[in-house]
Image 1 (cartoon, helix red, strand yellow):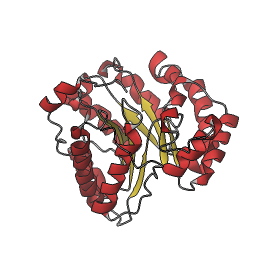
Image 2 (spheres, helix red, strand yellow):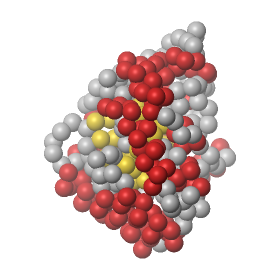
Image 3 (spheres, helix red, strand yellow):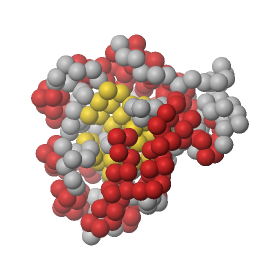
Length: 304
């Protein structure tokens, strides 16, 4: 993910401290508190990584078996491929079957770019219906569906954003990700978007990337969190940032958070599973969970 990318020397100048929770977050979690164990899903954004062969996947793994091996290691995937291509139900069913090795596995598909970027949510009823009908083929392995509007999608488009979210079926879990700076720099825009999402039970994605600290908005519009984390190839700040997130997730869990989806992005794909493993270790330790860790075939699971 290039969004918010900065040069490595700049990282030392950035304050990675997570901002305080938004008022909506406190309210939403307070109403949702039920004492149940937090459900946690951690994964990457692609299973088709040849660099994982011999490290995360057996060395002789065929390309057609990558998804099955991925599902043995993680319990979710941030499915960005659906953003770039429309898939039919038959393909989705095949993916679901390959992930059957992990009963709790979840696919988190990204809404196709034809809907979100090219048509900008206008006149997309038929395309959206087709997209969602295909996603239903995941059956019990369907996790949250997430809508990302483009970096140039301005608050003046709020009426279209509102109409689109209101048109979505209420029986499927959705998250939305906003990126343009004016959604966050002006409180009237920020409040309108997040209050709408809370009313419609649509989650708010939080994107943690070095060069855009404004999108680390710390607003939960449902008692479910979806974090898109953009690391920097295991730079020391990656670990500091993960520790910050573990601390905040622990607070959220105590306050009423019901589920967490954490998608890991790295410029070097070798780094993504390593930082996933660190995150899982820390969550298990701090929240007394038992999330399965990836099993590396090589003990040299570091880039340094």
